[in-house]
Image (tube, rainbow, N blue to C red; front, side, top):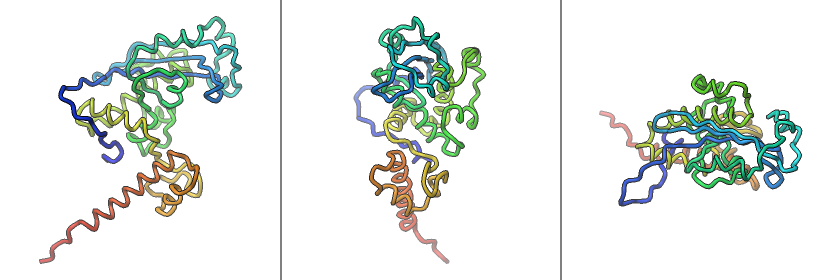
Length: 270
């Protein structure tokens, strides 16, 4: 299954590279608007040492929405009230304690990265889970907790009093997910540095979908979608980038298998 977690190109170096193994797993809750109109109202994080598997240093804070109204749907999800936000620090102050890491991870990294605007390497646990657990029924965070399944007993004390879609709760679940994902993918790698290089590459690419999410073959495992439909997907203008990327991936695999079959020597009959 190396095609699911391919090696990343590595620049030659004269000196040994010491890999960064500490990852700050982070989550945000927001006012629920488009990026340009949104406000971060809660940040939660926990640190994961990929070398040891240790999860530690939980942090959480509310942040003032600075007058931006919270979308009613978002409020129903995270249940953060105006009263809870009274006296909360402004975002620029609230985010500072979280900014000291070099590597971050989030379940939908593009969402959290765009709102937190913290520099560094970002890993996307959603995209990595698609590579590690392609057969799982669904790849939302709580679906992965249920279907992988993930053992949350170690972080249970920090989960007390919280619920899904609060920032620290989701950060803790995501840290357990990243640790479990790394355990699944690491054996395919030479070492942690190789894992980090591959994980960073995957996180910066479109998602490799497990199932088609729309159309005539909605819900079908991507490897079973007919070739002519995959070819249509990549030709269609304004098609979802994840769908196009995944279609190209499977078309390339099928083409390579055909080449391999042709090149395979015929058995010798005595």
